[in-house]
Length: 203
Image (cartoon, rainbow, N blue to C red; front, side, top):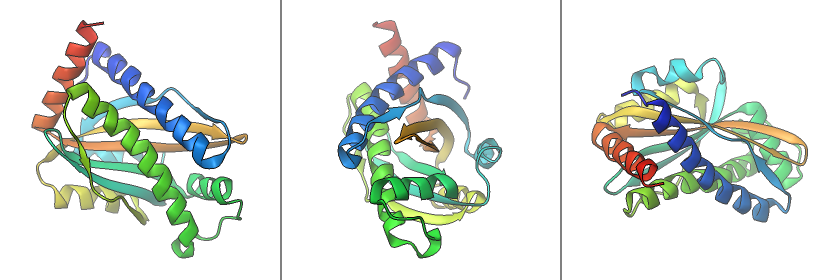
Protein backbone atom coordinates (compact mmCIF):
# COMPACT_ATOMS: atom_id res chain seq x y z
CA UNK A 1 0.00 0.00 0.00
CA UNK A 2 1.77 3.13 -1.27
CA UNK A 3 0.28 6.59 -0.92
CA UNK A 4 0.33 8.76 -4.01
CA UNK A 5 1.77 12.28 -3.65
CA UNK A 6 -1.76 13.69 -3.79
CA UNK A 7 -3.02 11.29 -1.09
CA UNK A 8 -0.05 12.09 1.16
CA UNK A 9 -0.63 15.83 0.75
CA UNK A 10 -4.34 15.45 1.48
CA UNK A 11 -3.71 13.31 4.57
CA UNK A 12 -1.11 15.81 5.78
CA UNK A 13 -3.60 18.66 5.40
CA UNK A 14 -6.36 16.74 7.19
CA UNK A 15 -4.09 15.70 10.06
CA UNK A 16 -2.85 19.29 10.32
CA UNK A 17 -6.46 20.38 10.87
CA UNK A 18 -6.75 17.84 13.69
CA UNK A 19 -3.45 19.03 15.13
CA UNK A 20 -4.76 22.60 15.18
CA UNK A 21 -7.50 21.43 17.54
CA UNK A 22 -4.94 19.50 19.58
CA UNK A 23 -2.78 22.62 19.94
CA UNK A 24 -5.76 24.56 21.28
CA UNK A 25 -6.49 21.77 23.79
CA UNK A 26 -2.84 21.59 24.88
CA UNK A 27 -2.76 25.37 25.30
CA UNK A 28 -5.81 25.23 27.58
CA UNK A 29 -4.22 22.37 29.54
CA UNK A 30 -0.86 24.07 30.03
CA UNK A 31 -1.77 27.75 30.05
CA UNK A 32 0.92 28.34 27.41
CA UNK A 33 0.83 28.85 23.68
CA UNK A 34 1.59 25.62 21.81
CA UNK A 35 3.00 25.74 18.29
CA UNK A 36 2.65 22.52 16.31
CA UNK A 37 4.82 21.83 13.29
CA UNK A 38 3.23 20.74 10.02
CA UNK A 39 3.05 16.93 10.34
CA UNK A 40 5.00 14.61 8.08
CA UNK A 41 3.12 11.50 6.97
CA UNK A 42 4.23 8.10 5.69
CA UNK A 43 2.68 4.64 5.41
CA UNK A 44 4.50 1.33 5.70
CA UNK A 45 3.72 -2.37 6.29
CA UNK A 46 3.50 -2.97 10.03
CA UNK A 47 6.42 -5.40 9.82
CA UNK A 48 8.66 -2.50 8.75
CA UNK A 49 7.51 -0.11 11.48
CA UNK A 50 10.47 -0.64 13.83
CA UNK A 51 12.91 -0.09 10.99
CA UNK A 52 11.10 3.08 9.90
CA UNK A 53 11.22 4.62 13.40
CA UNK A 54 14.62 3.35 14.56
CA UNK A 55 16.64 6.23 13.02
CA UNK A 56 14.61 8.72 15.08
CA UNK A 57 13.80 6.91 18.33
CA UNK A 58 16.06 4.47 20.14
CA UNK A 59 16.46 3.04 23.63
CA UNK A 60 13.56 2.92 26.07
CA UNK A 61 10.56 4.91 24.93
CA UNK A 62 7.32 6.13 26.45
CA UNK A 63 4.26 5.18 24.43
CA UNK A 64 0.56 5.90 24.82
CA UNK A 65 -1.45 3.02 23.34
CA UNK A 66 -5.14 3.42 22.51
CA UNK A 67 -7.38 0.91 20.73
CA UNK A 68 -10.17 2.37 18.60
CA UNK A 69 -13.13 0.56 17.09
CA UNK A 70 -15.93 1.15 14.61
CA UNK A 71 -16.20 0.86 10.82
CA UNK A 72 -12.54 1.86 10.88
CA UNK A 73 -10.61 0.31 13.75
CA UNK A 74 -7.08 -0.38 14.84
CA UNK A 75 -4.41 0.65 17.32
CA UNK A 76 -3.10 4.17 17.85
CA UNK A 77 0.14 5.02 19.61
CA UNK A 78 2.01 8.16 20.59
CA UNK A 79 5.71 7.32 20.79
CA UNK A 80 8.15 9.60 22.66
CA UNK A 81 11.82 9.21 23.48
CA UNK A 82 12.88 9.75 27.10
CA UNK A 83 14.11 13.30 26.46
CA UNK A 84 10.77 14.45 25.02
CA UNK A 85 8.81 12.65 27.74
CA UNK A 86 10.92 14.36 30.40
CA UNK A 87 10.47 17.80 28.82
CA UNK A 88 6.70 17.33 28.69
CA UNK A 89 6.62 16.38 32.35
CA UNK A 90 8.64 19.45 33.36
CA UNK A 91 6.54 21.79 31.21
CA UNK A 92 3.19 20.54 32.45
CA UNK A 93 3.97 20.01 36.14
CA UNK A 94 6.83 22.45 36.79
CA UNK A 95 8.62 19.56 38.51
CA UNK A 96 12.06 18.29 37.51
CA UNK A 97 11.98 15.07 35.48
CA UNK A 98 12.79 11.93 37.43
CA UNK A 99 13.63 8.52 35.94
CA UNK A 100 10.53 7.58 33.98
CA UNK A 101 10.34 4.07 35.40
CA UNK A 102 9.47 5.45 38.86
CA UNK A 103 7.82 8.73 37.94
CA UNK A 104 4.03 8.47 38.21
CA UNK A 105 3.38 12.14 37.38
CA UNK A 106 5.28 11.79 34.10
CA UNK A 107 3.04 8.88 33.14
CA UNK A 108 -0.08 10.96 33.86
CA UNK A 109 1.20 13.87 31.76
CA UNK A 110 2.19 11.64 28.85
CA UNK A 111 -1.18 9.85 28.95
CA UNK A 112 -3.03 13.19 28.86
CA UNK A 113 -0.97 14.60 25.98
CA UNK A 114 -1.28 11.32 24.09
CA UNK A 115 -5.03 11.29 24.61
CA UNK A 116 -5.34 14.81 23.17
CA UNK A 117 -3.16 14.16 20.11
CA UNK A 118 -4.57 10.72 19.32
CA UNK A 119 -8.19 11.82 19.72
CA UNK A 120 -7.60 14.86 17.50
CA UNK A 121 -6.17 12.68 14.74
CA UNK A 122 -8.65 9.81 15.05
CA UNK A 123 -11.56 12.21 15.47
CA UNK A 124 -10.59 13.79 12.16
CA UNK A 125 -10.65 10.34 10.53
CA UNK A 126 -14.10 9.71 11.97
CA UNK A 127 -15.39 13.03 10.61
CA UNK A 128 -13.84 12.37 7.20
CA UNK A 129 -15.39 8.91 6.96
CA UNK A 130 -18.66 10.05 8.55
CA UNK A 131 -18.46 7.19 11.05
CA UNK A 132 -18.43 6.95 14.82
CA UNK A 133 -15.06 5.98 16.25
CA UNK A 134 -14.99 4.63 19.81
CA UNK A 135 -11.88 4.87 21.98
CA UNK A 136 -10.62 2.56 24.70
CA UNK A 137 -8.86 4.01 27.76
CA UNK A 138 -5.25 4.82 26.78
CA UNK A 139 -2.39 3.23 28.69
CA UNK A 140 1.27 4.20 29.01
CA UNK A 141 4.15 1.76 28.61
CA UNK A 142 7.88 2.22 29.07
CA UNK A 143 9.91 -0.22 27.01
CA UNK A 144 11.97 -0.56 23.85
CA UNK A 145 10.58 0.29 20.42
CA UNK A 146 10.72 -3.30 19.16
CA UNK A 147 8.76 -4.55 22.19
CA UNK A 148 6.03 -1.94 21.65
CA UNK A 149 5.66 -2.79 17.97
CA UNK A 150 5.75 -6.54 18.64
CA UNK A 151 2.96 -6.30 21.21
CA UNK A 152 0.67 -4.62 18.66
CA UNK A 153 1.48 -7.17 15.93
CA UNK A 154 1.00 -10.18 18.21
CA UNK A 155 -2.22 -8.98 19.82
CA UNK A 156 -3.93 -7.91 16.60
CA UNK A 157 -2.87 -10.13 13.70
CA UNK A 158 -5.33 -8.51 11.30
CA UNK A 159 -3.46 -5.19 11.45
CA UNK A 160 -1.28 -4.84 8.38
CA UNK A 161 -0.36 -1.20 7.72
CA UNK A 162 1.00 1.62 9.86
CA UNK A 163 0.33 5.30 9.19
CA UNK A 164 3.22 7.18 10.82
CA UNK A 165 2.86 10.89 11.61
CA UNK A 166 5.82 12.98 12.78
CA UNK A 167 4.42 15.30 15.45
CA UNK A 168 6.65 18.14 16.64
CA UNK A 169 5.57 21.01 18.84
CA UNK A 170 7.09 23.89 20.78
CA UNK A 171 5.98 25.20 24.16
CA UNK A 172 7.75 27.73 26.39
CA UNK A 173 10.77 27.67 24.01
CA UNK A 174 11.16 23.90 24.45
CA UNK A 175 10.85 21.58 21.47
CA UNK A 176 9.20 18.16 21.79
CA UNK A 177 9.08 15.53 19.06
CA UNK A 178 6.92 12.44 18.99
CA UNK A 179 5.41 10.06 16.50
CA UNK A 180 1.77 9.12 16.11
CA UNK A 181 1.44 5.58 14.78
CA UNK A 182 -1.98 4.43 13.58
CA UNK A 183 -2.03 0.71 12.76
CA UNK A 184 -4.86 -0.40 10.50
CA UNK A 185 -6.26 -3.47 8.78
CA UNK A 186 -6.27 -3.67 4.98
CA UNK A 187 -10.03 -2.97 4.92
CA UNK A 188 -9.65 0.10 7.16
CA UNK A 189 -6.81 1.47 5.02
CA UNK A 190 -8.97 1.03 1.89
CA UNK A 191 -11.87 2.90 3.51
CA UNK A 192 -9.56 5.69 4.65
CA UNK A 193 -7.87 6.13 1.27
CA UNK A 194 -11.20 6.14 -0.59
CA UNK A 195 -12.49 8.82 1.79
CA UNK A 196 -9.32 10.90 1.34
CA UNK A 197 -9.70 10.66 -2.46
CA UNK A 198 -13.35 11.75 -2.23
CA UNK A 199 -12.45 14.67 0.04
CA UNK A 200 -9.65 15.75 -2.28
CA UNK A 201 -11.88 15.51 -5.37
CA UNK A 202 -14.61 17.57 -3.71
CA UNK A 203 -12.45 20.58 -2.86
